[in-house]
Length: 418
Image (cartoon, rainbow, N blue to C red; front, top):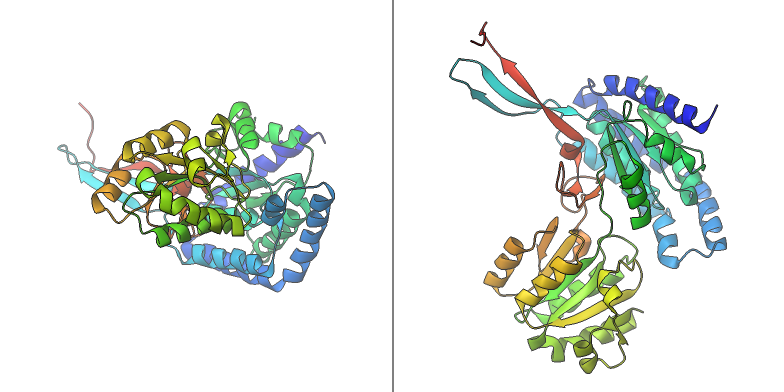
């Protein structure tokens, strides 16, 4: 069987299984997710054994430490996957929800009802927890899912997928509703992207290269964000200790993820005090700073920033720093160099905070909080399927509702159109 035939068979099976999933009760779907969570925890040793194979291969290839971190399945992350499934199970089921009903002059009633999208393809890199997160959200929203992770996590993803599939089988549900592509052949992705008659939506998660490849080669609609160039703007009215705490968390806690801060903007009125303070804290945390000419006056040890640095998603312990002369120049910088992901203002000026929320149109805008909260789980959506920086269908972290669409329902009493 060729790779194309293999992917076609997989997608056709998923399409058939999607019909079953679309009509499951909320109770059955929740039971599936809770059983999956229990099995992930019960088989932690199996998951860590398979994950170790991927970690050893990654280190042998010289993968960056931040990327190895994304790949690792610690006991805490396995519990996190299980807890994510439990949280999704506890969320209201959007399927079947009627989102409004109105009466027309001729007496017909018109409404809109949420329905699953059908078959969703997830193409992702490195982070094996995506396998469980994506499966949980897709199944709860009544969809079938095809998961294609990167070759660097093939053992981890296959192990997670097998555990989840066994739960489906044990509950007499179609195994094809949750499939993990186990071939590392790169043409599998290209072939999947051709199957517009079987797959309804593609969601790529990973680096900019992967996402651009998917967007350029897919015949299927794609939800995407190319990169996360997240900014934190420290305003003139900021509490500088709060600003330090927020910036450290946003940059250092997990630098290899898309909601980590990549550029720090500092109002010129507080630059003399704040920049030496934050530079010392960042230095202690091992962060390399690359600053504009003005920033380097206050911290001469900073490396000079280039024009490319303002566009860069480092995914590492590197931070670009710019001094701005006010709100307008901060906004202009974000509009020119941002990626519509997440922007933060640190300020005690209420009017400045409200202006920031109003005028900055990235998918997540925050006041006095770390950009690391730009995450579906942290925002109360349950485990997220991804973050969209495209404005059609979904914008920002995507939860259950974003994996549904709405159909019109019409109730009449024999009306005919004249």
